[in-house]
Length: 85
Image 1 (cartoon, rainbow, N blue to C red):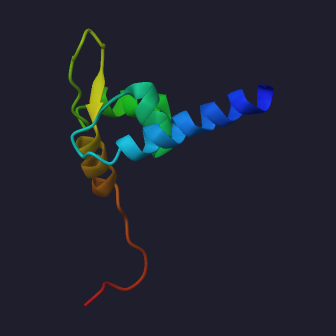
Image 2: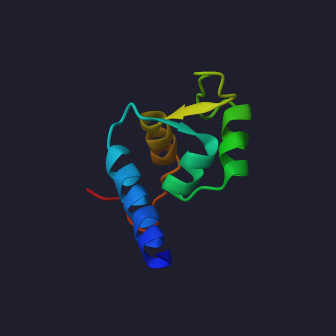
């Protein structure tokens, strides 16, 4: 029975991951932290510094749009070595 509950929890996580493929998907800070592997504090700091937009939806204090997070991550890209031609 315990193994069945564990499998159900894993299936729920897979379903959530599949549903996250929508660029307009709205995350809580906690969900975004887990999905993108970025600390909650770093996300809050980015919002407070104006680097990342947030929304107030359904009384959530801070909701983040997937596409905004992806663009913010892209803006942090750095290159090392020779420039590409």
